Length: 202
Ligand SMILES: Cc1cc2nc3c(=O)[nH]c(=O)nc-3n(C[C@H](O)[C@H](O)[C@H](O)COP(=O)(O)O)c2cc1C
Image (cartoon, rainbow, N blue to C red; front, top):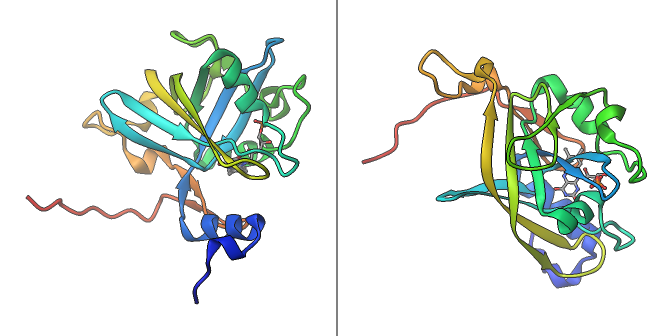
């Protein structure tokens, strides 16, 4: 089977892409609105892309009516955000926080979470997150235009908060304690419990 992208509707390209490139980690992102409302939403167009400096990229696409999501509006305004762990414990809250609430309502309260002040950014972080990455905007790269077009948000991680509960005896992150979840196509999600290790070749 072969599919030439220019011959299919955008919504079909979206379904193929998110089903084929899977699983994807989920950034659970807080931002601040102009009136001080703390916004919370999940984004699986997300990954880490380097360590010098530590850089993350995620993409709030334009909505199907081509308007901007609150997360993008907030980051365009003040250039700061916090990315939190998406773990098994929080799957219901992560999913619920993707509801399209009006900008004056906070998804943080809606999903029953509490926040704490961040250290280097004004955007508060989720109080009980296994980890939280305070980020400052480096660049926004719009890709395309119209429905589901991307806005690559490139951010520098400037501060990490790590709950020791996710660390093993060796002081490193123990994935079986972190219990990350990830997104696949359609309504599929997955856990990270089927772990194996492999040594890298020299
Ligand atoms: C697990 C999950 C992953 C998602 N990933 C994305 C994504 O990568 N990009 C995107 O634009 N929307 C994504 N969404 C949908 C947004 O979370 C949703 O549009 C949300 O309402 C945006 O919130 P905001 O308008 O407050 O920014 C995802 C939803 C879920 C449940």
